Amino acid sequence: MVSTRDKWSFQVMKPVFNLRRYHHKVFFPSNTKEMLIDFINQIVKIDITNHAMIELSTDRRGIVPIPTKEEMFHSDNTLVEFYERLDNDNNPEGIIQKVLVRVHNLSSRLDYSYVLAREGFIVSGWANAKGDDHRLNNSHHQYFQPVMA
Image 1 (cartoon, rainbow, N blue to C red):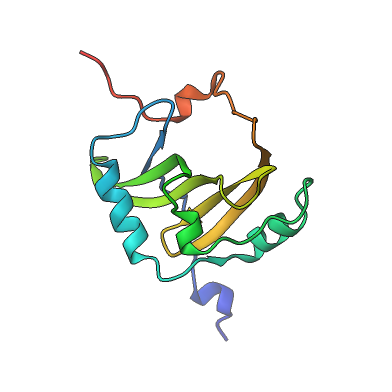
Image 2 (image 1 turned 45 degrees about the horizontal axis):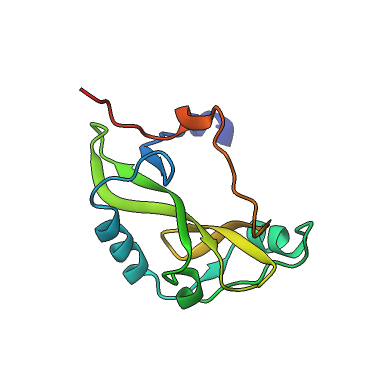
């Protein structure tokens, strides 16, 4: 008798990171507006993952509200960072995979930051004080910076 273990073999796959990370204080490509419009248009509604549900309900500043699509992409908010897909040769595809948006209009006391995946799911979120302007410090290496000639 052949055991299932002998019959099947599994290979552990390493994740492939074919994404380029941009930050508004470092660099945004010239086609950011077009990519963002495409990202917004393909989202039907905002939903949350289980992980986000826990984070939003246990934030140290209180419960973080779930914004509507209109609230998330209001023109007064800040697109803090986003990830663009890269092809197999590491060339940008012009497609945003996920965004980090700081929402300013849901509270007079707090801003709310959300990581939103292309499929419309909030995967993470937290509250920020209105005056809390994060500094990048030594984290510039995490974000794409074009090579200047």
